[in-house]
Image (tube, rainbow, N blue to C red):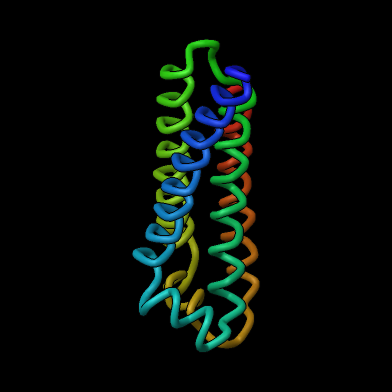
Length: 140
């Protein structure tokens, strides 16, 4: 019974950390794009913004999953590792967005909140997933 209780405690801690990292992912996309992200997606039904946010959340989820899956035997070290790799993934996704914005014409943030679908958002989403894959591979 103590194994179950211990497992529930660890799962709760990793789950809470994962949720915090997902929230930080939402904040990151909101900061990188003009306007309020929640309004863009839920009120204006902006598919560009939804795609970019979805890719960031999937990327963060993949990083957290990989970090937990390969976690250290020491619970504290595993939790710290998950937090560190998750934050690093978010930072790298933000940097990748800024670099992509810098090397392409127009303002990527403005394109993301445009109501018309735009292929640049798919490129940015792919970039998020690629960054997450790179971070995840470095963990394993």
